[in-house]
Length: 248
Image (cartoon, rainbow, N blue to C red; front, side):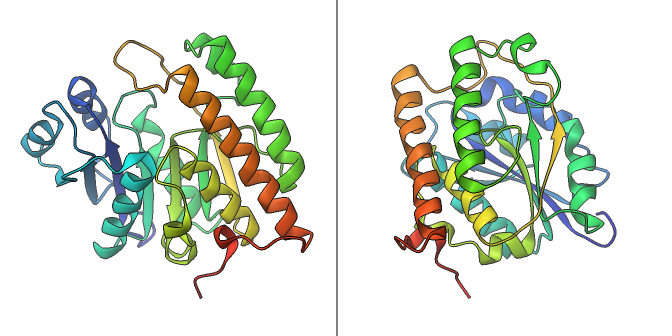
C-alpha cells in the first residue's frame, strides 16, 4: 500500500512456467497488496506454479487472446478493491523492481497512467530487442505521436500502471481481444484526457521471453495505425468510433 492506495499487480499469463517464479520473486510484496494471475488456457503448468507460489489464480477454459486476458485481469483487480493496478508480463522481460516507482507516481497524484519505456535511455537494443522490432517501434511511435498529439517515447510496452478511475471509465470491452488491445487502451487514455508518465525500463530478450512472430507483428502494426487514424478522425469530428465512447 502507498499513501493509502491498495496496489494490485496483474499478470496476464500464457505458457509462463519457466519464468513465472523469477518474475514473482522480484515483486516488492512490502508495498504490493495482491498479485493476480490470469492464465489464458496455457498448455504448460503455469496455473500449478502460480498456486504453489500463493498467487491468486484465475484460469480461462479457452484461450481468449492477450486483450481478453487483460480484460479479466483488470475486472478482477477492480472487484478485489485495488486502487492502483500494475500490469506486468510474467515472462521476466521487464524488471518488477520498478513497481514502487510506477505506483508512487499515481499514488501521490502526479499521473493517472505510468508506462515503463524500453526506449528511454539506451536499453532496448542492448537488452536484445531485434532490430526490426526496434525500427518498427520507432516508426509506429512517431506516427502515433503525430496523430494523437503526444510525445511518448513508446506505446508498445507490456509494463503499465493505472489508477482505479482510469480502468473504471475506459470502455475496455470495446477493445480487441488481440495484441492491439494495448494500443487501443492508450489511445483511449489520451482521448479522455488522463495524464501519462513514463519511466525508463531495462528489458531482456531471451529464449523463454514471450514474443509475437513477424506475421503477427505486421497485423499488430496495421491495427496500431488504424487505431491512431480512428483517434484523429474522431478528434476532427469526421467519424465516431465505439473505442472512444465514454462509459459514463
